[in-house]
Length: 191
Image 1 (cartoon, rainbow, N blue to C red):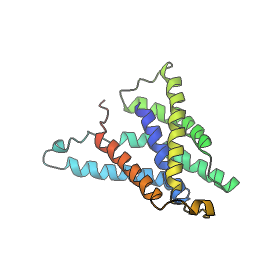
Image 2 (cartoon, rainbow, N blue to C red):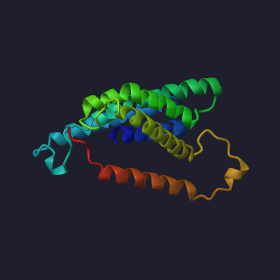
Image 3 (cartoon, rainbow, N blue to C red):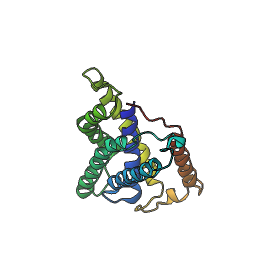
């Protein structure tokens, strides 16, 4: 489940960054910023007198972010190729296929080396890849939906101009509540 959750988060945040900014490289940049912030926070908390025990900090929170980086890089490369060829962003299913291939080739070996669970073997790989496709499709679709809510780079059509003004703030608020809920309730795996 950890690998699938990481695929979902990578595709959701990567697609949100790419569709909100319409710039190649923003997904990878977002991942690198997350790694840098995690390292800075981990270093500052570990330098506390009680070694961060009062804050219940996991011993090292960087490995999950290292699993996400290849996925974000693949999303940026796909976005660059499709934008240069069609002048439109890639459809969510194309992104999901590329993300699943990268997940299977790069991230699954990283997950098996960095974490004790899930056990990666011939029985679990097909299940992880099938559910990885589903996680990537849902994450990409949700990320594109959230990224396109600001309508940056789009012409406003008359039918879209009739949307109520409260739609965008409600979507953004729901997104923030969703993220805060998972950040607050997340329990890192222990190796």
